[in-house]
Image (tube, rainbow, N blue to C red; front, top):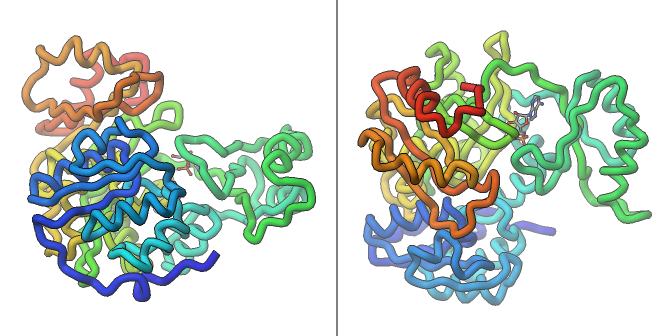
Length: 400
Ligand code: AMP
């Protein structure tokens, strides 16, 4: 597949309020982007397979079609002055094709890169930022070789489609690699099929002390804004809380922000990007993953920063000056999953006003489905964390 470069795809234009922003993908990220954009005076068109999706509920125009439907994407583009995407699994080929006829300031290249771990790792190395040691894996023999080189424990990851810990296997010395590969490796590769790129990586296990993330924004005019560092705690591979400011030394925070800036420059980013990182016991930062869009760990910006990540994204793709990213107050963001929704709604009337609730308008509260989040503004993050523990809803998750 050939992806048009950003320079071919789009000559920067300034898109002013009154214009329509087309969003590929209609989940909660699109919804929060749309709500900010509407407050700024833009109109919203969205394409999503689900006509009742969170973004369609707040959009002016909703097109119901699969992400891979080019004709539908062209209808979206025809209704919009600028097109963006709200999650990275929208079809990179559709986005690339759309770039030919519509204004897609982000291009499709970053989407193409971040949809594939091998491409993403190569891009991070090209940006000169540290990543966990890894090797590309194409077949059982190369997996055995990689394990020999990297040692145990190690993590086998699929190149595509992994999220929330899916598509990952932690390997220990006792594991039967042949058996594992016959289950997960060969199962995903048709007999005789030789993929053009490695479809797996083996990564050294990083004994991190904290997981961090940094949201960074860049506009077509090259302006960059780097948000404060978030400290993230996951439960069952799903983000549970983001703590800001992260409880790390200032020099580590500065390094994390510098890395995010370096990535934004190297990738010639347009829009916002989430950079997920590991902090090791030696104070080293390794970049784990990129999300070329607003990110769950950036939701704290909605209430705690002068400019939210969603407003910033709109500013960036519309080529407006980027907003001030300063943090007004310490904040803890806690996710509301399906199993938390009923108790959250039950207790809501008793909450203090510094608990800021955001719900995504999803009808069905399935277990582990992200239904909303709360930004708890506090004098210090320990108080915010204590308030979460006290309310009892997340009591079984003793990770904070
Ligand atoms: P990922 O899908 O790569 O973001 O990984 C999901 C989660 O798995 C991360 O947030 C980490 O908690 C864990 N993880 C991923 N890669 C590694 C690694 N190399 N070492 C230790 N933990 C990891």
